[in-house]
Length: 166
Image (cartoon, rainbow, N blue to C red; front, side, top):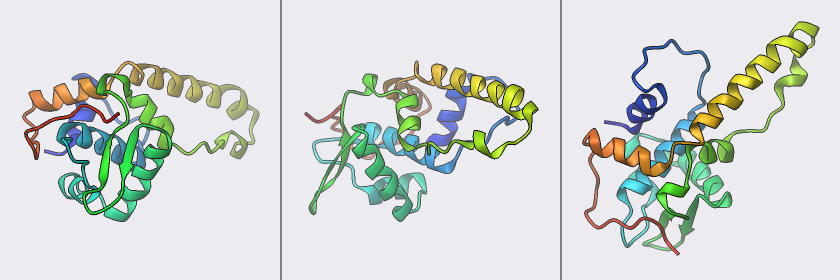
């Protein structure tokens, strides 16, 4: 089972809803990668090839996403033959909203709408909804997602677990 199902369950909390907004693949891949690392971390870093294989993420696309997460201090990268990625801080201190903010493009699409209705009514409504979603996701930690994954019997690759690297 891919982590996507766990993430959808977590966000929807059992409600049956239609899609209102499309979540970009980059965001899903980033969340899956961080949760995969949290679930499969051990004394050695988790290699991107392993994450790509388990989650079905293209390697070259995954590497770019992982580098962004390192730059934003969510992950720590190490080089060399046994190199890979580890969490930069404890699971409970990494929020889903942190990951989303790290990989989201800060494109200001407000300038693409010309009508007064869009500028004064529609865009403020959409911005308010986006803000409320991020507020909710700010209360969900990687630790909670890992607990849900464990409850759903997601398989892990290794038995020795390390929460984060100092």
